[in-house]
Every structure is written in structure tokens, then in C-alpha cells.
Length: 189
Image (cartoon, rainbow, N blue to C red):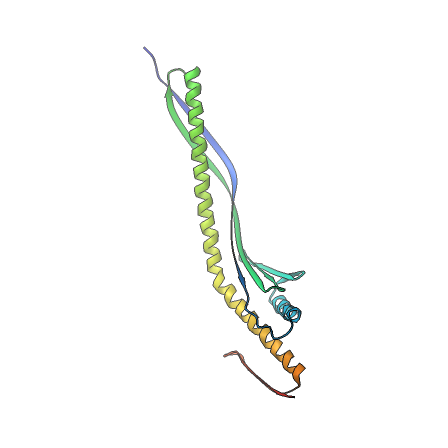
């Protein structure tokens, strides 16, 4: 009479899961002045709003969201990232006809392959969950970022129009309505 032995294999894996997401767009800035002057005005306005300069690129990280603006091309990248350390455990068991012989070895090898697949699946599930959180956080912040960048573009355009008017002649009158965003400049040529 043969006996069946229970073979159990357990595995624990510690890993760091990373997720990131980003959106890239172009600011629509009117070319009122030459491109290098417009880039300079854009850089000045962004610096006033807390962006840090790194050459022709300015960036700011707030609430886990990094906004980067390349002033020469007016390209904006909004990015979010996160990482999470996790421990994943899995266990599988089966029966073998011997406790330390060739059949038990084959059963253990098969169980180990199944465990590897189980752990890989669990890591993928956790990575997908973290990716969803990062994407949701990015989407939640995009509205505020878009509104702020619209204000930046408006301020840059207003300043460029003022400088262009001063180049054209003597400014006689200038009225600006902050509520509507309208600007009226009367120039004597």
C-alpha cells in the first residue's frame, strides 16, 4: 500500500513597484515679439510663479505632480510618478508518492513554476493598481495646471503687446480689465 505525501511550497518576494504617467502639450503663445523675447517673457512669468530654471527649461513639483516647460518651444510636460514597496506571498501544495524522492522533486519543481507565475501575476496586478492611482492623480491635477498655464500665457501676451506698442510709438493710453482679460493700448505713431 502506498502513501501520498503532501508537498507544500511557499515563496515570499519583496519588490518595489514604480508607475508613472505624463501628458505633453504645446502652449499657444502669439508671436508678438521675436521667439527669443517671447521665451524670455515666458521664463520670467513662470519664475514669478515658483518654477525653477534649468537653462531654457523651467519646472516645479507640487502635490507629486511635476510641470516642466521648455520656453524655447513652449512645450509643457505634466508628469506624475509613484513607487511602492510591497511584499508578495504565495503558497501552493500538491501530493507526491514519496517525501524526498524523484516524484516529490518533480512535484516541487512544478509547484515552484506555478508559484513564479502566481507571484508575477500579483506583481502585475499591484503595478496596474498603482498605475491607475498615478493616472487618476495626474488627471485630477491637470485642470488646475491648465488654468494656471492659461493665466501664464495671458500675462506673457499682455506684456509682449505692451512692449510691441512701446516699440511702435508713444503709448498715449493703456487700459486693462483683469476680469475680462481685455487690453486696450492707444499708440501715437
